[in-house]
Image: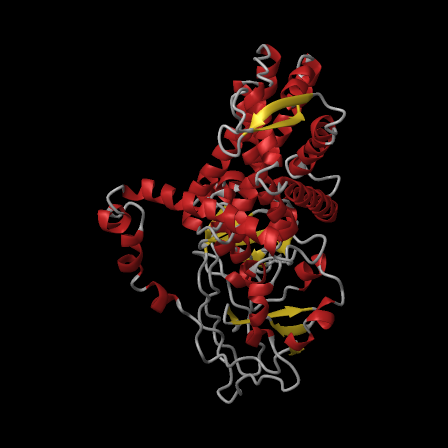
Length: 533
């Protein structure tokens, strides 16, 4: 409803794949946005007639009238769509669309949707193209230009400040200059830039305390929002169609994907566009994990409010790094007790002078609790019992995963060495992390026999089924979670997001298969030689 009757293109494209409208709500597209035609000149004493909608498209003024959940239009990439019937079916929830109801959502839509999604899946929702309005009705020649009120700032003036170097927003009737705050915002720069030059009151109030502006950013307040005192002179035409579109063919056609220059060695290098794009996407994908993990460890601005999404995504990325290391380390299980236990001992004693893993595990526990807390709060804040299963899928799989992890930690991690079977071997601080039993140059150590403990549990097919159910919940949760993280992550350029999504899904599949294989291997494979000293 925030964008009902408005152009939601920018915000919509920020969180949706390019093809979401065509894929899911083609029947909602009413047609493109067009500008109203010029109204006939009326007598001076008569009221100006309302502009008529052109027959070859829809103006943004017309789109702005359809801003309710029973009559919802949006503009996407020059097309007007009627998405009313699709609102209850949208995977991201009704609010994600209603935020841009009656508005142009092209920019935000294109950030997370494939380019052909509307034409492919929801062509029936397209009403027609967006067109510019013709010149406004004639007004008396002597009509003065609109004067900005001296006691406040108009929305027209706010709308001029939409760049990263000059960013204003309206919050609860106050105009704020948030330019200097952009790099410090816990939710990221993009969360503010989405509403640059606009009124962000509704979205702001959903996740911020009532007094947060006065308490922390009183110096950013420029003044109140006021109405303009007079209408703009109607003699000036706002018809921009000619200067914008007169040379459209010459400018746009060569840039299409089928153009000859789009597939040249000069643009993409000798490996071609596909290989290059995947290589670039992989670099961005890895850098996302490195950067966000470092931010999680070293910054104190992970989140300021309990429903801040950064507390959810950063903790998730940190835990994904850990489960990747954990999954790869568990490969030692296939090679026997000494491999598995020696690696486990190394993780608990990675440096000869310390047991570094303990603080890492404590931090990991804190990240997990933060993730669970923020996810639960956001679920109950932004979802409802009427939400569809797909909207609650992360919460449902996360709940199963939480129960699974508690049981797993009780069985293995929280068991003291005194209560666990002991494994003696000669340790070495490098791969393969152990020496032969007769090599007295290596230190004789003991550690709880995790190999024996795991094999013992997985003698029971019931425990195997329990662990496989937990792994499936983990795989599904990670698969959907990493998709959302990549889609919303501003550090990955949009042109590489689909390739980055490929690597994210590949990562989820590989980790899922590795974790799925361990219980089955332990159940069917005999215990290998313990190799104790």
